[in-house]
Length: 112
Image (cartoon, helix red, strand yellow):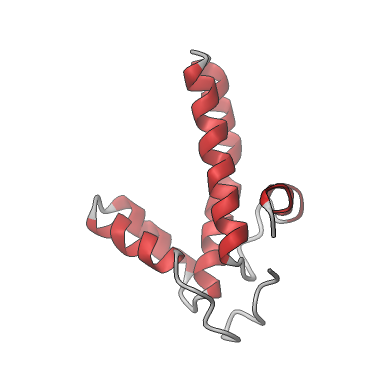
């Protein structure tokens, strides 16, 4: 899955879909798009636009993270580890970078 497909898939098809699975390319390309989208208004000193954009991207980012954790056989609730500085972040980045574990309780392997 390339950059455009990942962004469209997460925003159009799975905006608030917390069930299912998301492969590494889908998740990481979408996170890159969210990072770029949130830094551009800040660089242009348009704080109100950045705030609205981050608010609009909050749900699809959480949904993509949940589906990515499902892909490695973990619960989407583990995203709450983001609330633990440094240690929680390190654990989550490690998990999110892991390859798929094959078929699990959350369904078949995510499309690539």
